[in-house]
Image (cartoon, rainbow, N blue to C red):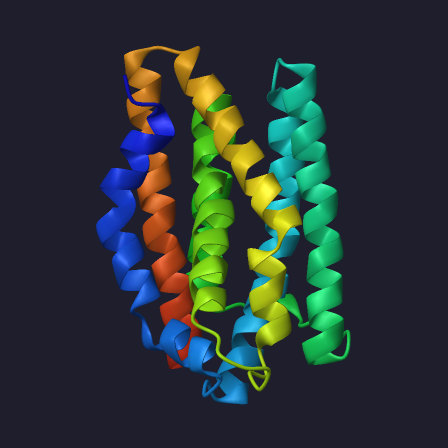
Length: 216
């Protein structure tokens, strides 16, 4: 019998394929992504991760298993550290004002917040694409690097390294345990949440590529 994570990744594969083929990702991999697009992405990512860390902490407060609680607390604190390091490297430590949030960044953050009143299994499934997609993208890009000249190599390395990979595997493991311990209806809601937030990952990359602005 397949694990929940195996089933849901198969369902998400078409969306992931579109992510890995997106011009933001292909040019990031080639080192040819315009710096202004990358800076736009990082500024939005800073706003997104601030909210994401709070959501991870909220999930930790709801989980019944103490080991799962510890893992999610660690995810939240590690995410803050990574955010600060990357933004110090590429943005000089500058923190963008909330007024700069893009429509897609606000939408993704709002979607995640909307799961706060759902069963904790569903809320946990919603945050999983941010781990899993980033780790897969980082590893795939890293495998295509042929030299030391990519200006985005530090970003690539952050999401492909052993530490983030271990966190990703742990997040997947916890979601599988939650799925195993709940009923069919909740598992289906977990799947829906995961697939929706995987689509939001594509929208986030696309927003950065387009340097998305409010139309009004």
